[in-house]
Image 1: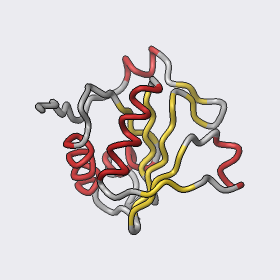
Image 2: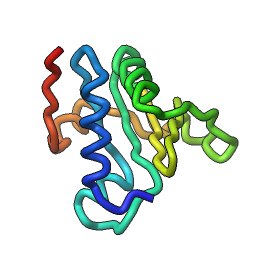
Image 3: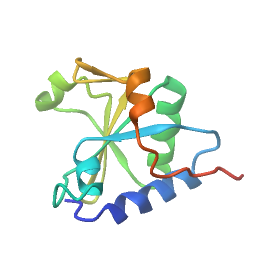
Length: 123
């Protein structure tokens, strides 16, 4: 369980160090509620990206920082979950463009999104 948003910020710092190109990722679900202090904890960090290129860049970065891919079980079948990554007690659910076969990243959603961090890549 993640009880402080600070952990997620540290995770993004580690991801940033392993990415060679610009990536825009959106955090959805419990991690957002944790950030807004509307929830005391979350079991995972749900990340959605728009393109296959960004998806692959995040996958590569997560692997480099020690996360291991997991095959989504039957309980995740309805979610159209692209990949689960685990490291110790941390879990990342990674989606490309669509979540749960009902929720897609739209232009309107991107415009309404609040930018929390802008990690510049300098390699």
